[in-house]
Length: 407
Image (cartoon, rainbow, N blue to C red):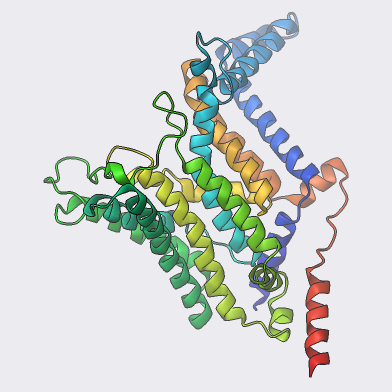
């Protein structure tokens, strides 16, 4: 491993080793940064600055008003709308948060897995699009009963994404190519390939291509069923995400495969000395990572009755990086981080209605990532202790000694 790669791996480990306290502080600071932008762009606040020293209460009142209304609108649009005239309308924001958070959780699990192995997979977009291609083909070109069509479409999405992820791992293992470069390039390749397929009537679109490219809608037998009836858009995608969280937890924390993945992530040289094939582990890690992203692709492709467009990936692949980092690449953290960012997506329209720019939430997200990715800064500001060293090193040492003793 080169010095640059070693420093990169150490930095990634420190970012992911952050405790619950540092994560909460980063989220709070992110919201404070967003509040500052809301205040600074408010016309009433700017006007009150002209006579701030004579009437400071006007400026403070305007600042409090814009922040209270902005984040209040976020709560009403993402959690609970107390002004709604029916219970269904009141809880609908929460169901939208769950619906929009599900693919973020699934993709976040995938990217978080590679982070635990010391890899930096930023190819979630390309892997998700590959899963979309496979899922759309099965959902639109096959006629099967529901109990076969839906599972087959989900499996197709997982297989498609896994193939691309495993290819990246294979190229890294055999040629030494950096996974960051590989995944970036595959993002562009698969995005334009997806658009190309939509423009060809013989492939994904039966009708002649006119205007914006669009895929055929999935057959009804391949759609994820609605979870709470026709009054809500929430479908079984959230159930898929919750199941995936438990699978990820068991895989990384309780299985032999997860132990090997964590060993390689902590110290590839020590893992190799323990008898683990590091190169093969890279291929496995990238494949498993992409499999979770493939579930996010199935959620996108099979969760709507309308044909997909090239923007169906909805930047989930990139947002999932933030979710994985904020969640510390562990199952419970990614679940909560995915729901938080799902809330941002669900509440953004409500903020826009009040005249608050929805880009503020993008600033909040970026600020959270900035603080998460700067652990020494947070520790220095709030005098937090350094994270404890993980016990994986001791597990590796014990494995090496057991292997030597067996000889």
